[in-house]
Image (tube, rainbow, N blue to C red; front, side, top):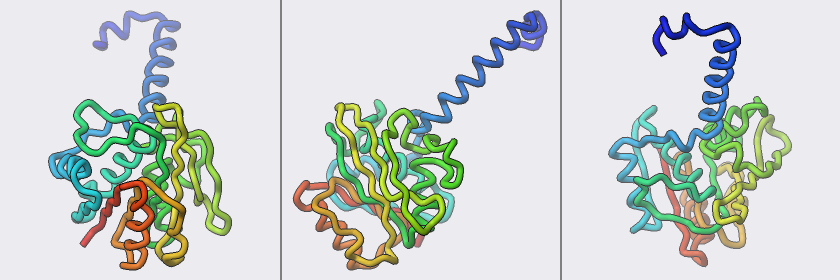
Length: 213
């Protein structure tokens, strides 16, 4: 809208326009996944998931490796895949493990990108899991703003489960019956990595690693 067109509006029309723009921005903020536009290396990483169970995206700081990991995790948990997607797809609700070196780093990295600012609950739903898809969250005691699990609505009608972990708690904390997807953000200890692979054996699930060398 040009300045002259805006000037011709009445006060009530300007207010209505402002409200519409604010609502548009609010909806965009709560569905970040829909606006994800990867660059070529990120696309390569995603596409490789269709052929390989284990993948690594290793890149320097601020080059989008963790962001791409979060976007893909959001897609698998919700079943919301974009038209350009050529990677692996899950047509049902899944169970996912995701984490980093400690619960604090998991909160500030993985959780923040998937859910939103950890210490501002009003903004939960502004990460790569759309707000409308978050059904429930459970908190972890002892670390402020840290979540233990998230239940996510999948387009199939089922509910995916996301479990947050930290490497510093040891291999045993990564044990679960079976999971479909494991995302390690930053390089995990070998025993933790092998435990993640083991958790996906029964499902033929996938393991993704994103870290800075």
